[in-house]
Length: 358
Image (cartoon, rainbow, N blue to C red; front, top):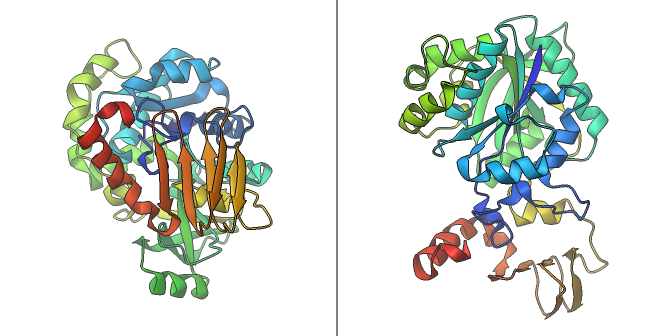
């Protein structure tokens, strides 16, 4: 049977001050549609996976938000991490949980905070990916055709083509966040694709990969028979999960395994990792500004994004390539090209003024 694991436990600090530890970006409605990024992710995958087969992995503190936003997901399908340990332990746990219910399961793993504009093309890619991993011991990642030499994404280099599966290639190499010159070479070559963080495999294949390439995680989460998918599971996870190393699935498995493939796709993807990604994905005024669900008056402003909570008016002059984000607790005015530093700013705010503001 086909399953989906949605990873939705991140803190989303690069979208501060809108995204805060109590309600990070995956639970926010960025586009004024009435649906959060997480809800949009669930809506998008439902044509390919039954709602009862959607598993959510999140942090303990977000259980109530998820139950409120996704009442159609049964509570037993919400896996609560006692500690944040990045994507590899999260994916390993979910695979054990699913394998205990269905040893022949195939799984698509999705981040909860991506924007995808062409949903029919997305669903077709997932269906084709499922078909590919159902027929062998294969680990498949989706690669996005790059539109620019973006330095904030990882890149996948395609190798030999799979003749029976158009658009699927053996992976030749992974490169994590290259500098601009290297990213430009990658884009010009036509051989490299953005790593979307979307993965497909069978439960058996990924658990075997953990045994081989990340034995420390495999051993930590290797529970006795009769623990996973039973009332004993939460207690086992509470005791053992925090002992897992903090590592991404890319470093733990994908860059090491020999049975990794990439399916090259184009479906209007953005990871919405930070404010610039939201700016790039939003309609702009004639001056090149983005106004995010807010009333704005600007003079001599360009290339900037303005966002405010509540019934407020933003008036600005002379800003070029800036982020202006106003909430009930904080106001951020920051250069767009330095947005990667916002994560550090959040730590500074917490240290100086306390956790109420983050």
